[in-house]
Image 1 (cartoon, rainbow, N blue to C red):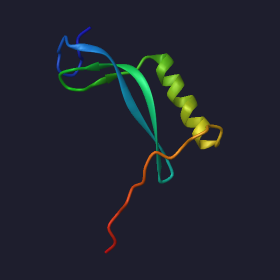
Image 2: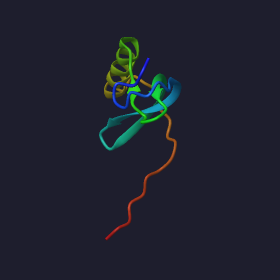
Image 3: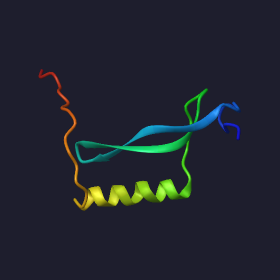
Image 4: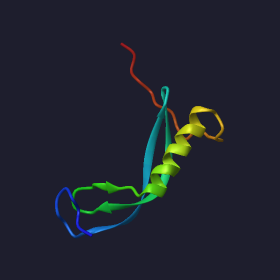
Length: 77
C-alpha cells in the first residue's frame, strides 16, 4: 500500500490515540490503524469507523465508564 497523500510506501499499523470531543471534555480512545510514516495520514477501515461511532454514541449517552487522566488549566485575564 502507498499513501494517497504523499505516495510514500512507508505505511504501517500503529497504536494511536483518537480524540472524541464531548462538551468541554476530550475522551482519548486508543486504536490501531494504518499510518503513513512519512506524512502521518491515518487510514480507518469500516470496522474501526463503526467502533469509533459506537464509542461516540456511548459517550454521548453516558453508557461508558470514563476516568479522569489529567486537568487542563487556562490562565485568567
